Amino acid sequence: MSPPLLSLIPVESNVFFPLIFLSLLFILFLTHHRTPTRKQPPLPPGPTPWPVVGNRFQLSRKTPLHISLANLAQVHGPLMLLKMGSHQLIVGSSSAAAREILNTHDRILSGRYISHVIQTKGSKIHNHQLVLHDECDHRWRRVKSELFSARALESQVGIRERKIWELVRHLGLMDGRVVKIKEVVTFTVKTIISRAMVSRDFVDLEGRGEGEGLMQNVRRFADAGAKLGDLFAVLSGWDWQGTYKELLGVFGRCCGVWVSMVEERRGSGSGSGSGRDFADALIESGFSDDQINAMFMELISAGIESTSATTEWALTELMRNPESMQKLRQELSKEITGDAIRESDLPRLPYLEACLKETLRLHPPGPLLLPHRAVETCEVMGCTIPKDSQILVNMWAIARDLKIWDDPLRFKPERFLSSRLDYMGTDFEY
Image 1: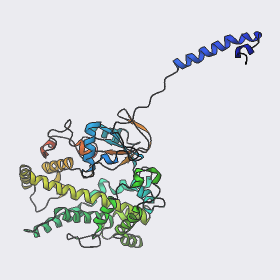
Image 2 (image 1 turned 135 degrees about the horizontal axis):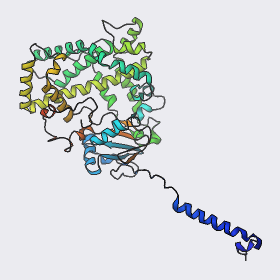
Image 3 (image 1 turned 135 degrees about the vertical axis):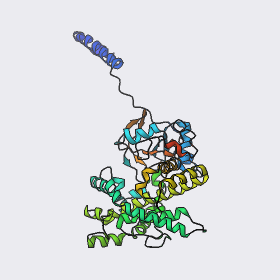
Image 4 (image 1 turned 90 degrees about the horizontal axis):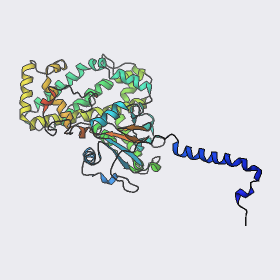
């Protein structure tokens, strides 16, 4: 039998016993009195995910996504975590959550989420998506500040007023006939944007012209939808469902509307007529044709649909609420003396502005805003937001919060007449 360990130590080595005792005592002290490490805050609460697919099938396909998320937030709170396959989705559904995401932690949570179909290996679309890369593209930031400055917008007032007057005149000629308001407004906004882009009209008020069918293709591009690679990271580098191939074809057909105009501009070196348009600014700043195509695509998809939808909802709400319609008519009759409203008249039309604000509150054109991405791990409202999480802000839910709004489901423009709330991005209740 092996001798005990201590018996192997010579008697003269007993001087080591005090050292061993002190060492054990020191280890014991460190174990019980070490400086506590800061515990990482928990992840946001959320519905229990299913194995592999996460919460994907807990969102009803029959209900719009922003409404499904608002219903879940009623149960799980204003900051909520959902698992979408292997990806994490964070949803803010209160004004406090919106302020934290869009203001307090804007630097960390300002990354752009890019669908896998755009990230597909070798993707020509991904390589030139300037807006999706604006977190790191300083050249795009500089040009964007020029294109959307107050001075640039002021220089295009004449175009906007002329196109609106053409719309009003067209509607007058349609007296007694059925008019699809959203359709004709879409054509009008399309021409306003195309004038700003290349100083040309893509379509007329009947939808005829070089841009005929453009919006259908833009919608197909925007509605590519979540595919396998958006749910499972291991598949994100492959175009398993052929979505990228289809998307590239749609992208090419959209760009075909203006590509010859941009080429002509490069050759001539100036825009048609007086004034400087977007094509001039982008060409002079050294952007390639592919980059200009991507920027124009994003400008059209963001601007046209939102404006036409808001106009349609405003008219719908006014027809549903004859008292509001009558108040607006009285204001217009009192303040407008000519045949058409000019932008310089708008400061004298507070009820018109209140109607617009109330329409945007009840029917935000982008109810979940643009999806953001966490470029770093951070803490929001006492919860950990992991790096690369997708971030959504549910403005539709915030606009129906009883803690903020009195009778939130009612169309009541008067609520904005005595309020300083604005839609310029500084008020997170709206």
